[in-house]
Image (tube, rainbow, N blue to C red; front, side, top):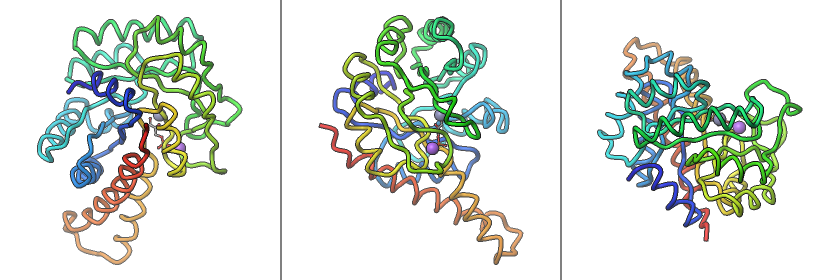
Length: 276
Ligand code: 13P
Ligand code: ZN
Ligand code: NA
């Protein structure tokens, strides 16, 4: 099923799909093992820095071939694309979906850039996600956060034709100093007056119950990155304290397993949201 269609189905049934960032073979394998055992679909997403690290075609082929190998229903997505050019290169490579993040630009400019990517993606029959309002990036102060205005969201969706919209409702990238409180009233209003899949960025550090509430109020895609990196690196560092083998194939599996366990838990939380 195309991601655009999946989003429509999720939106109708008030369900969500997990979108996990991955960085290398092991993190990809961990998330796919979790999707496999829970029998859940999954979006494998790559940020620009991960694409630069792995190389665009290697990154894409790794994701695509691993989805096939593990027999998981899933899609490959560009996370936080920062230019039409990058989106186009990803679409050319075969990505099922791209995000164009012009959320730091003025509203009209955001509309214009997003519209250009939607036009482009039509040729590839791919899905497009954009962001309106502003979800704080790692290291940015909460002061620079601007929550999504429902009325603006309605206009933005109508004028751009996006399939998915990232909303700023109180989540932030990375871990939180203080437990975040999501603005569910705002989310409900956005859901009521738009018809696209709403996306929650900054999934790491959000309590399970809040994730479930967000899904019940219209979130169809939950992005998870930091917790994956964190559990992977923590486990690896622990292993390296006692393990002095040079056979890296024996060193990495516990970290891969830890990613799988984390994602398995997240998938069961999402599945239990019971949207209706
Ligand atoms: P976290 O790093 O907080 O999980 O956010 C992930 C994200 O939004 C990727 O786009
Ligand atoms: Zn994000
Ligand atoms: Na977060």
